Length: 446
Image (cartoon, rainbow, N blue to C red):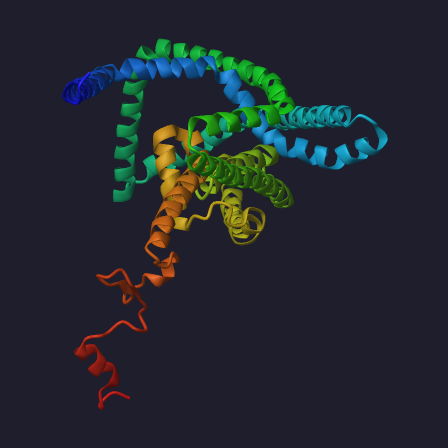
């Protein structure tokens, strides 16, 4: 084969290769366009069927409720298990030759202690709450006729009064009585069936939630036994699915979230328990009615940040006022003083700065979480928003560090700025206009 033929053959191969590459490129672009259009169409139909997708999601959540309850219970009981392992494992390893058996025995003892503590706490609460609730309802029924008689005597005195104020009150009472009678005849009678159906559905739902919680306790035992294995599997999956840098960032965020949620939830439970006990002691000394019931209400609602004390104090004050109006006023004053003690001393000592949020963002997260998810949103809104706040703060600080700019917010006051070259100018070195300089350093100024 001559040199010209060899050169011609090489050119033909090159042209053939370019043609094949061009065809592959066009084919790849066509596949990309097709996938983009297909994804857009699927997203469009997903939006059209958003309601159905939401229903499916909530159905899955209802089915997995025992698992969710188990994860939550395991998370709450984990500090007890960790403390038992911390003290019991070294002692067992000194006495037992097999370290693995010592760890398993310690884990079993820790889980058993945690579950017994949980069941004892639930039983104690029900044992205190149910008899007190029964007693409160019985006393209310027994004292209600006397209160109604007293109200009737006062109304008779008003009707006997011929003054202008008495006429206004008579007219208001007459209109209110007519409205009440119309409501009883029309709305109440028509909705009795709906109310009974709702009541029956509510009882069934409550029993279903209790059953799910009992299964959740069993699930939590398995989770606590194998928590290290689950953590290792999750960590392995994260490193397999993401790059090393992103995987490390995700794991760091997970540890920080656990620190925020754990510190907030555990601290808030301890703080609420202390407030409940102090409320019990205080209203017992003041000899107020419904001592146990009111203390439990105040302690439980105190778990909700900021608004919790008021949520628990309002129905408790009304309940006490039905028995003794003056003691109801005393109770409001006592709760105000108790919450001042909690907000300024007890809460900061226990919680510290576990969330890193200011008062404004705490209120914002509670209102947003409560508006979207109700009571769970009010409870978990603060630590959830704290995690989001931490993520945004980390991103902002990282971008500022890349630009060689300070990350502390105090550096960005009214006079400090960053010039067009990207250099930070502190307020002490920032130039001021002549008017301002003259005002501060002029001869007429001291």
